[in-house]
Amino acid sequence: MKLNALRHGLAGLSLALLAAGVAQAEEPKQLFFYNWTDYYPVELLAKFEKETGIKVTMDGYDSNETLLAKLQAGGAAYDVIVPSHSIMQTLINQDLLLEIDTPKLANFQFVKPAFRDPGFDPGRKYSAPYLWGTTGFSYDSARVPGGKLDDSWKEFFEPRPELQGQVAALDTPSSLINAAAHYLNVDECTENPQDAKKILELLQKQKPFLKMYSSDNTVDRMASGEVVLMQNWNGSTARATLQKSTIKYVYPREGVASFQDNFAVPKSAPHPENAKVFINWMMKPENAAAVTNAIAYSNGIQTDHLLDAKWKVMDAINMPEEYASRLRLEKECSNKSRELQDRIWSKLKG
Image (cartoon, rainbow, N blue to C red; front, side, top):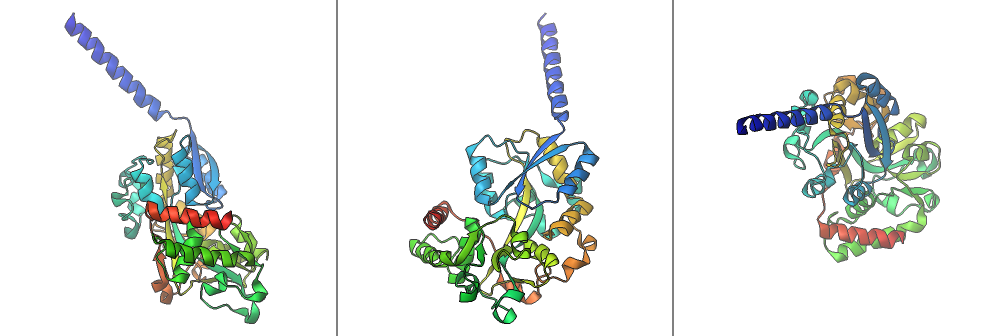
């Protein structure tokens, strides 16, 4: 009887495990995608849905700070997120991400060597490469005195009288504070209150000259002429230039932040298997190239042969070699540094 009971118990356990496996394999054909605003071509989602049968719902955010706060608060039912490299270690250390073992996905073979084993996620256990770019500033050369601005952050933080009131800054704390730190030649992750005071004073002095703080619609704001000068991402500038050829992008000589954005899966994801399907699909060269050709940011996949010629002739995308020394990979700051940044932002926007 004990033997029969054991057999029945094992059989029941096997059935339970099988049922769990089937349940996992039969996830609802849904995917909740939380991404930076205006950072993925909607038409590509239609292609994914047609090929996989998985329906995608996409929401947008405007900063890494917003993403981090959402995840830390809990209850965020997203399957795929797009954190920058500068918050990856925080997400990992706070146990907010699911291990997805990206190298085991079939299309990892197409990832460029430089993106396979990043310091922020050794072995790519938690992430896959999406896009990378820089944060400088753009301006309309047809509307500035002499048709050209100096390649310095001074033009942005201390705008000429003719441009005051026609300048926009990104409404993204880390991006604006980093730029100010580069201009002042202080560490962007400083823990020194005196450095933080210098940054705040610079931003407060600049504030009356700004038309707005905004990280949304950066392409349209420049292309429509709503502003003349704007702190901007290189990809947004390139797309605006397609609409208005007089728009220029600047790699400031004091330093320009570079970033790497990544696909990752929150630990609370309701459809983790669908998330892996999406991430694997996005590492296929034709799909990665479709994103770059649509929104003008470079990717970490072997797609160079698939890129549109129009992007290759733009400095905003094809950075001149002499500017390489100006790139500053964004850092992941300490908690103490972030607290100082929070204080800077609260006082600036308060």
